[in-house]
Image: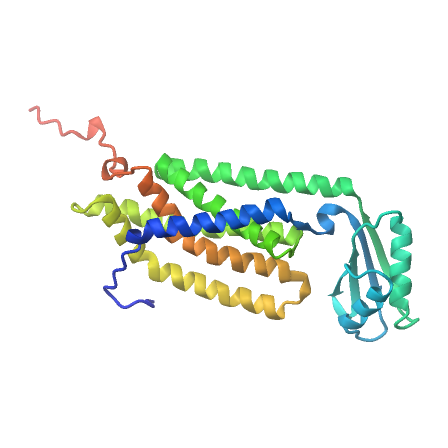
Amino acid sequence: MQILKKGTYLDLMGKRKLAIYFSSVLLLIALGAIIARGLNLGIDFTGGTLVEVKYPEAIELAVVREALDKDGFSEAVVQHFGTPQEVLVRLAPQDGMESAELSDRAFRAMQGITSEAELRRVEFVGPQVGEELTEKGGLAMLYALIGILIYVGLRFEYRFAVGSVIALVHDVLITVGFFALFHVEFDLPVLAAVLAVIGYSLNDTIVVFDRIRENFRKMRKGETVEIINTSVNQTLSRTLITSGTTLLVLIALFLFGGEIIHGFALALIVGVVIGTYSSIYVASSSVISMGVSRADLMPVKKDDEVVDETP
């Protein structure tokens, strides 16, 4: 399937300097937001209290939020859990108040809607657990990047490995920066989505790199920039179709999937858009700037391949 007219040739690499400026601005905004505003960490990381309540009939979340808001829980995260009758509330820690007292107050506020509300579960997440999750989440991302560096280095060439990791760090920083800039809650599902973005973006980048290697061996004429530009053009339809169909699913999840996966879907939407852009511009431009050439990707001739013409 093609969405671009056959024979279309765009001078994408000719605009790579413009793309570098664009990426630099995005990265500065993202880093500035992370440093200045910080992440709005969810209860998974900060610790807090989970309260699950079942109502005799389906209940609107807005009604529950209003009841909690009146009792001082304006920051509570409220969502349906399983059925429209069951509600899960996540409460951040409050100074001078024990977790048990916090959950009792929240439940009483929810009971104010109807006395038949039934308390199903109360769980406390301590700050130590949050610290552990933060540390393990960061380590998971670091290990993923190291593994990718080794894998791409062995499959292609070390400059391709560095280029792919630059693109992935670019994608992760901008996605996380988006959450910091708009102060959207960053919880475990969002962290999982950021890790998924690494896999998605790498897959796109590997497809482009495969075509670049193939063209370096097939095309006898042409400079490095021209060959890489041709390779990006040849894979452009595939990249746009894959990203477009993935985005359609993610937008549907964001709009109709419910509050529980809003953050997850939003992180993937941002990550897929940035990952598509980086697989076209950032990874390939990085390889060009590091001076890769045709000689670096030609197969190595083995001595035993020389034909022995001795009678």
